Image (tube, rainbow, N blue to C red; front, side, top):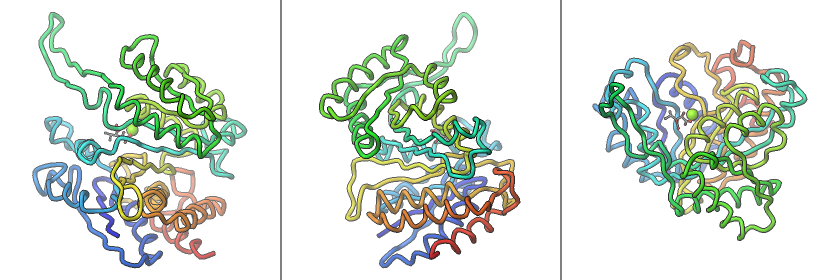
Length: 353
Ligand code: IPM
Ligand code: MG
């Protein structure tokens, strides 16, 4: 088993270090770890945010554990050299088209949500975000117009792209409460019209799943009004980016949510994937021991589940995290004073209890 760890920028190294402690504690037989550079740090060391060497390390691994990328010091670099290109490049080069972002309320944290506690308690959903298409990867550029410089980005989805993410979403819904909401903007966008028609066609193969459709603006409103109505959500790259950040604030903190990015490649142990917290590099708190490592540790749990076929270890980690949160081991993001390593330590101590 080979895991590649790419800590990246800002708080990335701090939070992945705690995930790595948890991984070490599991003492998995035959596990080899590799570490690679991504993001601004990779740009400084190798002249590119996603060096060829890092990409090859990822290709040779069974799974990738990713920290975060982003650095304000790179704001003026051309787009292809900016830190974000590391994660976008990995997603596209590795064919990781399906992004799973679970969001569920943690018992005892309801009062930390931006929503009323009784509303926050009802959150238990999975955002299935398409990750290889949409306006993210369409042609883009700058041109001159009568109104001055004009930026443009092409948005598109073809049927094959929609079909494969729809299948992932329907299968995920089958394993949950069999309700799927497809989020689009079909009242305005051609991209969304094809999206919706294709999802409806795929639905015929999953007669047990109840499918409904929602425009993204309405979904954003419904989400904060009554999140309990959602179970599995499937949506495109841009809408999924926005809705999944919104979901995290409703749970309590963006420092709590993990994600898995999966493609089609099967390994000897499961599906190859990249696992990362939903949060970014948070340069404002980097290097101060203030970051919450829970999202990174839960990303490791997802890695064990999807890529290494180690469901029991995944559940063990998830129980340990629930345990420390129930004990009130909170970092600054949750109004407490535990440091990044205190939280890692507490999770380790809980692993065997
Ligand atoms: C995310 C992030 C990325 C995205 C950025 C860092 C490119 O916001 O993973 O949600 O937009 O996909
Ligand atoms: Mg985002």
